[in-house]
Length: 362
Image 1: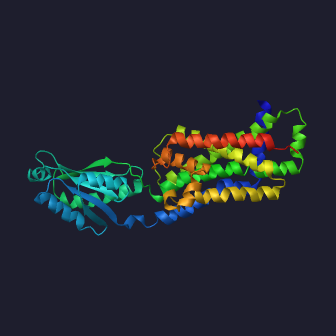
Image 2: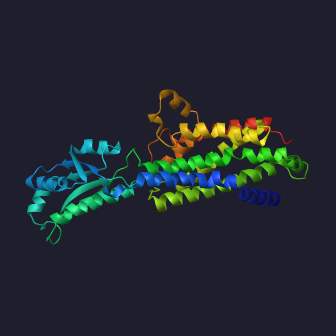
Image 3: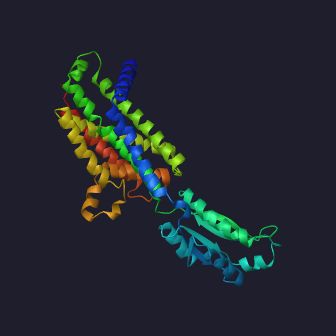
């Protein structure tokens, strides 16, 4: 164990001295998050809201309230039934739902004597910025309605409902975490091939150290890097772009570990076939870029042509990013979590089998 820890520390020091590796595994994903995050979150404060309006009271008072909301320049109301409104919100077609319940007019005419009237306001808990904008608009209208009222005549009754369509940054942050995990694993091929070219692996293999210790130290180092990435990316998403991390941290960690091991096996496969460091660089690019753009990292897979969708269904990054979105922000699943885990395990097994048969130490 002491030898394993010493080798891990040496690998970490070697990694920290490699500026290119630091850029691709740490800085590159953060650059994408900041660039796209600021692009798609800018100007959100004055954006128009599409709100489904449900009037179950159908009285004069509810009609006046509807007119008050309709007079707001930033609000577009769409009148419908409650069932249809909630269905449309789950599909991401409206930003929020306001329901005026039966008995609203009677409560208003009572002047608050039987308690204030309520309206139900449905928002998505995973889209905190949008929910805040909705409640700001609701508060502005009710502030006028309640002017001079003691106690207030109308109060909102907050309700939450999960939607299938995440806002862009909530979709993007788990995707970039998956991309980062992929890069940590696949880019392990380059230093391995470089060490083999310099005969470092040959010398290490001749020492009393066992080969499982050499491999284990590299795996442990890559797992530590993956966890560091996860902490940084999640912190930036939550603190800078207000991404609501609503899922299990433990399950997120499980998929980070599983994804890291799966892509590390692919890195070892590349190292098994690449004869030079330059060849390893080219092969990692051949593996990395198709997965980056065909796995749903930047846009949803159902928006791609059928041929590309078929390719996406066999790419491991598709299932890692999908699992992270489901677990972290409650995204709509591309595949069940058990299938995501099974696909990653399959890639892990096949990759390590090939590497164990083909990898050369000199």
